[in-house]
Image (tube, rainbow, N blue to C red; front, side):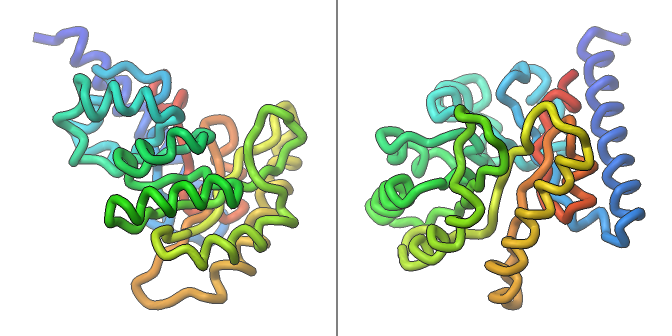
Length: 240
């Protein structure tokens, strides 16, 4: 019997297939391999039913959440706790120092380090937990006062400082595109991040080590791939 759940599953599969097709198109245009692009599902506004459907089909393995508390109630203690080991869980929202201990405990990667203060808190709590915390530095490429991130020109200084911390493994940069600008302006901003990413990470590449450039969301992931992103963060385009 064709149920409402079947219909929703078909819709989600179609959405994922459409995104994969666009990834292939962008990679073909830039001479890249689609296997270079990691698709992260941003589940901030997604229903638990939708998330469960996609994970059951192995359609998503990387998940991004914006808030520490929502992850605690959803993935650690709530209805999705049985699926926790099937995904890699990223914090992609701003982290406050008073939430750093919980973030270290429940996330697999913290992708929004943007200050020495936050990095120090994460490093301290990771040491207490006996773990090395994978992380990205978030850089700011928009003029929005509400958007987090460190200025491009200050990113290298923060990176060098965090690299001295024994319990953080910095793996790359993350950025959010400026809002309400044309695609070419978005691509230009992404290319600025790609430039410092190549400068700060590619020169220290080593066998078996993968670095991450996390650029692109539902409305601009094509521009991000054109600019060199290796991880795109997609929410509404999957769960629409």
